[in-house]
Length: 557
Image (cartoon, rainbow, N blue to C red):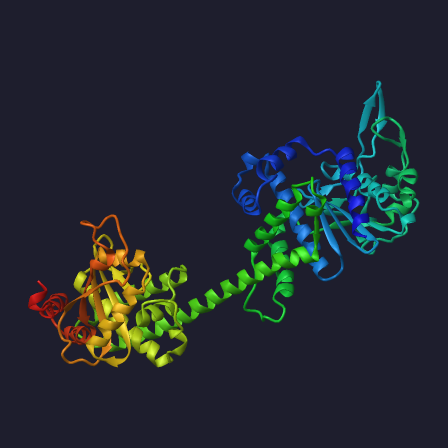
């Protein structure tokens, strides 16, 4: 069966090229924007190309509309109505199941309705003449002619059942001489044609091939024009003005297939239709390989599996973002409660709300991840399962302390602090300054040496890039959740990495493990207490700066 279909469509494409040569402007568009290009490039061209660059809006919208119709048929294939969908860039789609083959031409216009005598609608029935030796010969080159002549490729006598569909984005308005409404209701592709039918009348006239020889449907297709027209359906789809509705309709049907059993919280969108269209364009612009033109269920299932994975990933991000923002708002509410009624509550509230907005933007833009923040806060790496092990109470308390300290630093520095783009410890920095504040929280209250050991492990296990970054910056590490009463000052600590790595920038043949990463350890518990004490001070900024200076040990200088 597959070999037979290949022969049929090899001949089909050759014949189509002869009887329906592609419009030069359309060929130019295809060669410039689509042929031999990857799907991603094609989609980008469809999205960004301007009308003046593509030969007109109709050319682009026609391409796009055709492939939306193709996707509609692919959906029917996924529902087992068809075994294959074949694309060919002459506005054609061919679908088949067993011995049934349907040939479809897609026509579009910026208009919603056209008189059948008006261009381009008149192409449905209108034939042109070809001059040969100063004689004119009427050609079988109307849209319906080209559709019906496909019956010669899959003849009824060979057991094939052919159907012919003209899929249009606009309505054909009847006139007194041309009324084709009869065919708009032929959904079953099997209506008896009345003897006075207008289309039958016009297509029954004598026609010739391009050599001037008389052409007969009976000779070509082994069926007369009346029998063929019984299987012709003039279908009016959604207009180009309703393209959003068409896209939504396709997405809804694809969602029903792709996410069966997943519930309603995950779906694909129009951008995913672009992904499918890019794939289809990439396949159909290579006419040298018939196999690429044939879209089977196996092929499309692989494509949809990629979409499913992508959509599920995006859905998980959305869920995480929602959970993160919900948690952030609960924590911010608690901090607001903690500062309520204090002398400086109004100014601090402004900073708190500003920081809340920053955090929500940080999460919503995809840059921030609360799950990763917790893992880095406790372990200095995202390669742990820390988040899932923390209770809701611990999560909220940890963030309350973290955000409180960050707001305190914002007051002291009198500038907003952003998350630094490093990969180990959670760090905050001020733009343009060679200083960062890192945060390390102990899982359970321990002495200072435990915190130092944990910091050593984190930095030694960090990447070389991270180690070099920390080495070249003024590093302050605020320790949280300790129970060491003697840890009440800022203390320096040197950390040596374990591997001997040569770095060209180091002088005197030093190795990286011979150059320490110097950090200052700050007692987070005391800093937090100082912040709450400062809330009722006349000058909160001055007070906090003085308190921070008092934490500096004399031998640090």
